Length: 210
Image 1 (tube, helix red, strand yellow):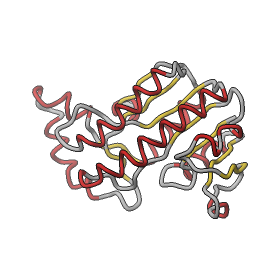
Image 2 (cartoon, rainbow, N blue to C red; image 1 turned 60 degrees about the horizontal axis):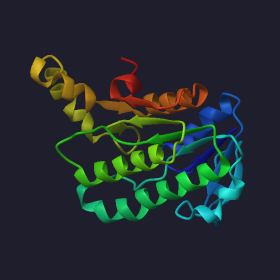
Image 3 (tube, rainbow, N blue to C red; image 1 turned 135 degrees about the horizontal axis):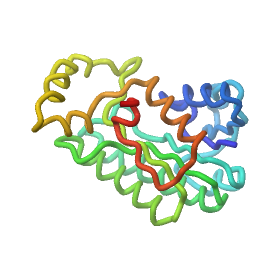
């Protein structure tokens, strides 16, 4: 069984569809009034992703918990939103996951270190620390930028990436901060659900299948 936060979002609704197709029983956390947006084939739990008390008793015991709550279109100008939404939601998710004694916790962090987006990286790093402190059996994915509908502008950077990957001094950074597609990200998340090793960091090259 899989419990999914952010199920109506950019990655969440696509991941839910993929997991249902793979035969997984998916329970989606949905805000009051957004029930109609829940992905097809999912059981629905009404709750507030920022408040563990609103849903923790509905998380299936021993399930896989996938946390996909976060500010849309992250940018340096959204530091306050990262703290109010991303950080508060992962705190709630960790509390709910511990309460339900989940078998596996899957979290989307971000590649680091990096020269930009310091506030976002700091909050996601804090999220990773919360997971480790809770002793959860976790898989953490660290993409940099996920290309997909409404998120195509970095495609213009691909020639620069191609050059940087061929220069020894910049090769490692170019690979670590590479661009992944939405399809690659969904596949990596679904595979993490299917194979719960725990204590695993999945970086950009692994997400891309390099």
